Length: 112
Length: 110
Image (cartoon, rainbow over all chains, first blue to last red; front, top):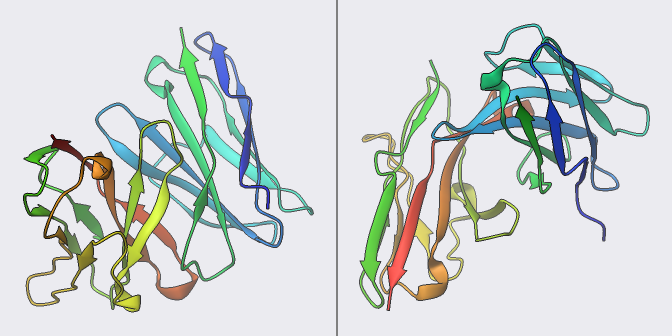
C-alpha cells in the first residue's frame, strides 16, 4: 500500500514569494493534516481538511492556507514568504476520527 | 488551553537501563493520548495509544489523569530505541486533530 506522498521534497524560495506544497493521502483516507516542524519548535499544527472542508486551523497567520481536492489530495500555500517560514512541512492522513495518523516524508522549505 | 509538554529535549541512557520519557498534558476534555516515534531517516509513525493499553517494542504508557501525565516507559533500553519521541493529544474529541509536544530525543549508548 502506498503511503502518504509529498512533493516536492525540497523547495527553495525567496522572501516575499509564494510556495505551494502538495500531499497525496493514503487511499481511503479522507482527512489530511498539515504540520510545520521548525527547528526547536516540534510539530506545530497548521491545518486539518476533511471531505474538502477546512475543519480546524492552528495558530498561524492567514497567509498560510490550503485546500483539499475531490480526490482528497491537498495543497498547502504559503504567501508572502518570510525567513522564519523555513521548516519541514509534514502532511498526515487518516480516516476521520483519527486514531492513527500516517505521515509523509515532508517537504523541506527554505526561504532565502 | 490544550497543551502537551515534554520537558526533556534529550535523554541519554545506556543499553539495558530503564527509560522513562515524560509527557504532561493540559486539556479540559477527556484526553486521548498517543506516542509517535521517528527513527533516523524514517517517517513519523505511531508507537502506541493509551486507549489500547498495549505494549509495543517493550514500551508502555499509562494515562494518569490525576497528574495529567502519559509517560512512556521501557524497562530495558536497546540501541535500536534511539529516536525522536513525540507525545500527542487528540484535541477536539474523536473528530479532532492531533497536537504534539516538542519531542524528546532518546539516545541509547552501547
